[in-house]
Length: 111
Image 1 (cartoon, helix red, strand yellow):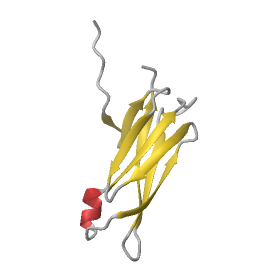
Image 2 (cartoon, helix red, strand yellow):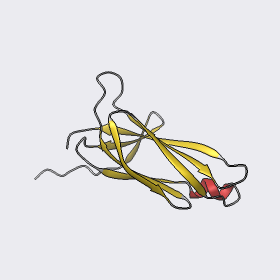
Image 3 (cartoon, rainbow, N blue to C red):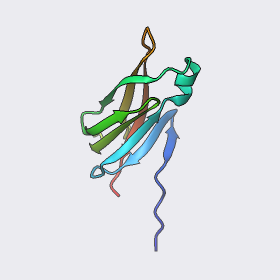
Image 4 (cartoon, rainbow, N blue to C red):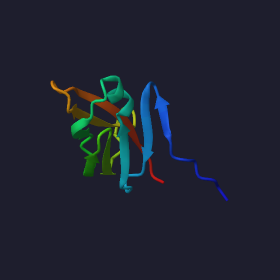
């Protein structure tokens, strides 16, 4: 019996990469707690997800320190690296508000 390779985050040329099957609908969490703590214990006021056009945002949400997006789809690019960018952009409750981005990349693989 073949063993299945575990799904995990891997670094690929400095980018955080996660494998995703194009038929999977999965959640991806962005933990901002350490960064927010460094900025006076600020919290998330709003979140926006910017994703590759071949991905679909099914749902998203956030609490004080973590933002989560549910994604479906994904098409392996015809040329270039097999990496689809998923960016989490938050705005904080601080006055003035801080706005920052964090990105991961999805590698589309049939499982």
